[in-house]
Length: 343
Image (cartoon, rainbow, N blue to C red):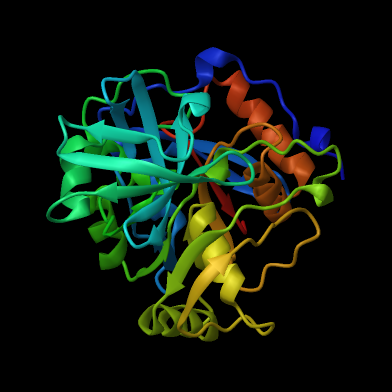
């Protein structure tokens, strides 16, 4: 399979720059994974697609305000540091700008010295190890000084940082939001639970590798990024019970999908698990647990459009995407949603 097999034309004006005023007011394209048939409703209509005994699997990761703007010491120019992975001992793997000015030994100040840091190492690929120095609790410093690390295709300033968090976010650690969950409100979740749909929570801390383009011509040559994820014993049992009793496992977002598929046994059962995953799901993959998927619309030639193509078929996905373009759906993180169903 070639990377170009997953390309499609997307007019730039369809890339959503800001969230809708109403979270669940987005449009929802319903795609039958078997036939390719589509219908068009709104996200607040989701309960009409669910059945008692189904299980929604949601990623409760919370986005770090991981973008720090500071200046080099003493009295140097402006720099930007984006936290990626906590390496322990107050040290983070980071993206930095401008890279040529951020050599080992470079010292940086943020917030008039409330937080300082030093570049300790340049990693293969250009990321930096940065050791921070501060008094108190690091997450509190980030809440004070950090900004939301919005994807590169969003140019508009986000007025309310909570709109880049799901209403059920809890476990801090993501560099990007699990965006399929942004459509849910607390009222909608209650409505779904009241009708007998189970809510199961997993954690996958989304890395910026999720936005990394596939540069190799053959998708099998692509090196998939790693992300940390966890499944609790309670969630594992809830999903196992759903499958035993004939309910559907419906993942909210590709991150929830990758989490449960990473840890599933060959017979589709789950147990309490935690660790790094670099699972790469593309056409030909056999899903062990997932039945249906709620997801946003993804970038051309991305690993995520390959994942949804594995579930519904490349032709069905590209046809549905073309339909969404024709109907001027909103794309990517703050855009509209798709429900890939089993009919």
